[in-house]
Image 1 (cartoon, rainbow, N blue to C red):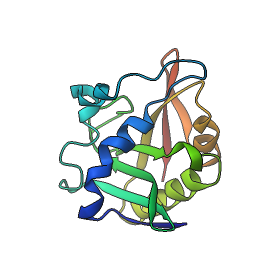
Image 2: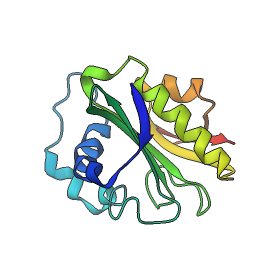
Image 3: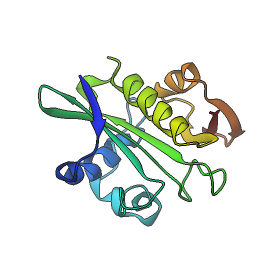
Image 4: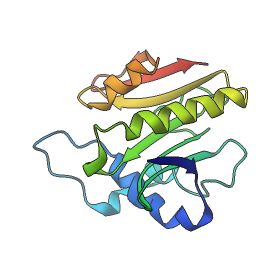
Length: 155
C-alpha cells in the first residue's frame, strides 16, 4: 500500500469517499447516496484542495484507490476553532481493519505537525470502530455530545 498526496485525477473519488466516511451502525440501512449533497456534508469536499489549509492524502494498492484522509479548517461536526483543522478518514469496506486508516492518519498527522498546526479535531460516533484508532493515535475526548465525541489531538 502507498500513501500519497491527492492528484487532480483523484478528485472524482471524493464524493464516494465522503459517502463511505458516513458511519452506519451495524444492522442499520445506509442513507441514500444523495445525503452527501446536503450543505452540512458538502463542507467536507467543496473546493477541497484549493484552500491553504486543505491537506488530502490517498491510499492506493495495486493501482486502486482504497482510502482517503483529509484535513481542512471548516465549520463541521468536529469543529473546535478557526485554527484547528478537522480531519476525515474514509477507507473502502474491504480494506478496513487492515492498517489503511492507521497509515493514512499517521501520515496526515506527521504532515500537519510539520506544517506547524497546534492540534487536530474530529467527530466520531461512540459506536464507530474507528474510535479505537483515534485513541491509539493520541486523540482525546474534548466534548461528549451524546452519541458522539468531539476529539482533539495536540501536536
